[in-house]
Image 1 (cartoon, rainbow, N blue to C red):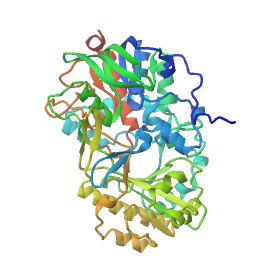
Image 2 (image 1 turned 90 degrees about the vertical axis):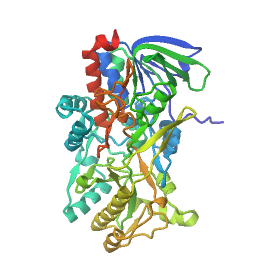
Image 3 (image 1 turned 180 degrees about the vertical axis):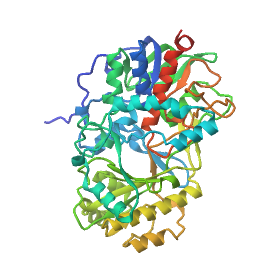
Image 4 (image 1 turned 90 degrees about the horizontal axis):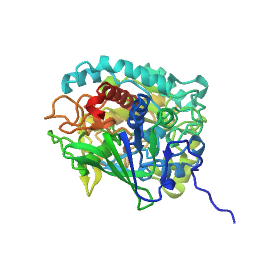
Length: 514
């Protein structure tokens, strides 16, 4: 009888990578620096500090996988690469579904690879409101360094799929600004599997860029270990204690510097359950989420949305109004789950999958939520602001108008009970109606701001380089540092801030690592 193999292999690992199979009892190890999390922030800090000659250990809750492990089995990829299978939500009305990666490489393994610098207006706001004087100029060389490391470039023409060409056709017909996306990729093959582990290695996620660099310079990575707490002596962080997944074994790391890079949801919870408090009382507050809604447009022509790159273009016509549009492709199983249809009606709808374009928008939110720590675990609370709901509804109307200009015949909306749109006139009338947000399907992959940086310890959680106020030897290096939402994909901003923070540690080694 054939025995089913695991969806993802766990084959030969490079030197320096340890998994649950390597633990046969409790372990205590020492390092100069321990980094919690291996995503955009953690892997960058680890690589920069290891290259500078410091002994670095990275502790990652997820498993270690390689490019060959990523397959077209979407449900298996979601189960293995997403925290809680992607079924996490911020409580509110409506709830906001959010997704986080849980693997070596973090969310960079499952994101679309969009690589944008922080907009100048956002950096100016940070200078003005958070006291981060000169940060725009300061970040310039760090952006350049990151872009070189992860190979930021425009898409090869042959890797742009028809769904994105249709988006561009509609934007051009409307006379709206649309730009080619910059992505961390090297000659993308256009398999449109970015969100489920790149099967070709073209996407330069941390898994294939910063993690190998860190390992090359001697860093060690302990995968399959959930950090339970940061150890401390008074206000000084001294290391971490974690549990090896699937075992009773414990891993303790003693270190001179602790860097939390577990994301805007888990960093505040980790610090809180470890007993750290800040003078501002703002740890876990200021949660921004870039709420996102999607529409599904059905065309008469074949689209084959699974061919081509993820988000080859972005419509920037309304960026100053807080909206950015893009076309994405969702596998049929994932898309079908998002429809309210059931039974034969769902089957009839999915028969048209080959003629569907899925498009959505990023909204720069104006309200914030909070991450609370309940029984040691994080729970996000976020209430969509009325102004943001109105902006999203307007965005749905505008995006639908664009898709009708591209030739769409029918558009399904993310509003419970709302009739499908059949014409551009329907799309324009949509903007004149008030649709209660409680029945909307809202999602995000951009969580930010819960340990915001700034110079005022009475208002901010960390200083200008991510060091936690009123503590010693404890830093943060993830999107929780953002003082405000940034209105674009956050990965490159996280990496640039992490590069800058690592440089600060190197320049002040006596303070952090003596």
